[in-house]
Length: 300
Image (cartoon, rainbow, N blue to C red):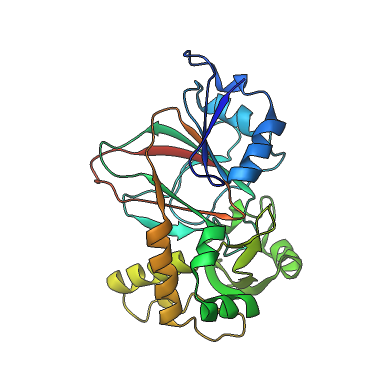
């Protein structure tokens, strides 16, 4: 029977072996128990269990029959089934966000596995979306309750097939309306589209949670504008309210400040596995030195 050590009264917990030994990850056989804990705490760090990439894949298969391959960003595919990937490569910090909230393929659960941690920095950041919502001022709450967020996306010809395996452009065009995607293919075969999603959601306990990718889209836009010409297509307005009205900078600054205050750093140990409920828990990462390796695997 594994032991559970909550971090806070209702957010985050560490699961460790009951004995001093390090059993295989497969020893965590009670998937229903872990689901219950994840529903309550939102994030579970499984520490002290042994297992390689194949064991990691087998463990996640107890919780999901289907997985998503992240086609956007710079990632490498690992493992046997093609759904184990590296996290976003590079060493830059990533602000808090909800994975893939900008498209209709946002997963319910994320699983991370640590192979190598850097000597300094590189912690994964976690935040309770319920606590985030509670810190928002009344005007911010009203703005996010009243309108959904619209994300603009441009997926390269090498990226979009990850979300539409075995489909050609014509088949993708047919599927897009049912998925809430509005757009078309460009001359070079890229997929350009808008997608709208609610910035707020309900946690399992019924509380309202802030769970979206607003801050990281502003972060991306600022980085692109710093290194590319303003006319480049990547610097187009990537995020707005559903009706096209820009998200005010003051609202973004409020969101960013709350995220900075709430972010809880999670130091890694090799072999650790982290389960995150992506529907109401936000995650990010701290910067680490470019020559100090950090190797994390992710499934979703």
